[in-house]
Length: 428
Ligand SMILES: *Cc1c(COP(=O)(O)O)cnc(C)c1O
Image (cartoon, rainbow, N blue to C red; front, top):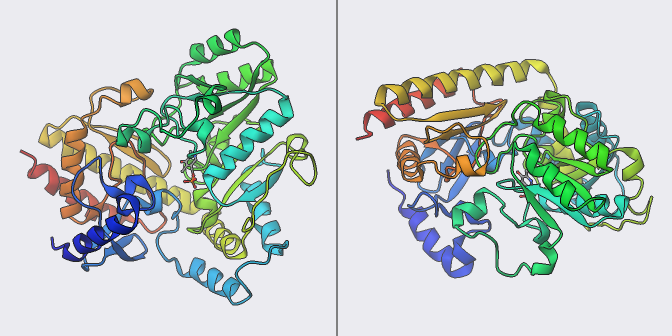
């Protein structure tokens, strides 16, 4: 595989951008080798600057559920762009996207658009604190909620991949009210509520963890969180930035039938453009300025291009049929990988919920960060590199989710399985 142009560009980029990238995991640090510079994407494929083609399972880390450059999404962006790229005033597109999201997720009664998932979780926590007049929050080890200071504690993949337990520059004072519980462990949550009675504003959770690799909630975990938070007057926040429109068209809250008070969204709702959102119970959302006193704002929030792209993307996935097709492709891929790994005698455990999946090089069923972190990172790195050589682009870390799109059809999956078989044949 020739990647000369990527090599040259990466050298140049490293002199201009820290580490040569604008988001750490893109640098391939966890798997070695060197990142590919991308020229374009089309449907299920990515093309690098050297002209190599890859089947893409990263999909911009989740957003591209309609694949790259879907004609309907591109058309929507073009039509919006000629009418101006930003107004700094309300536009009808915000109502259109809000309506669609609320249709998919009935627990979201009102919504505020922002520009990233980070902004969404940061704002939702401010809102929960304003609403409860309490300061402390609970997050879970291995869950990532963006890079806001107060959430950069035991935060999963990006941080784990870099081996930074925490980040310098996060003052101790900003994380002193962040309590950390164990994923899939209700006792660890009860313990914190006993220790800090009446002080916990919010519990924020990835309802299906995706940022330590995909770790599904065990039976009773999400119900347990709902029961405890209701009892304690604490706001339950489902961070569905990744799971929303990924694990089910109505998100994890529909799949598991749990009603969070607030939901944070991002990724898919922007159709590949930068959008985040937080929403939930009307009574709580009415506290957001200018309806209420909790301040939160954004120069480019509700951006018309981003709204148009989001609307087009959601319209492409509103039919149950596309979800059934993606589920069938997911099953096909699970089975193909399982049989190839078995034949090669390589122990792997796959997890998948809807269109989110991970191949763990491990014999331990993933349940929380402590069971996940011992996976064979060297084995995964080797798999990653060989899959790349065989034309498949996976997330460059053992602790990430992979994604499917409506463009990953039966043939693309069969081509992927052939690459997996070839990879495992060359394993020793
Ligand atoms: C990606 C992600 C975020 C952060 O979103 P950004 O748009 O990268 O700021 C927050 N929460 C979860 C669960 C995510 O997967």
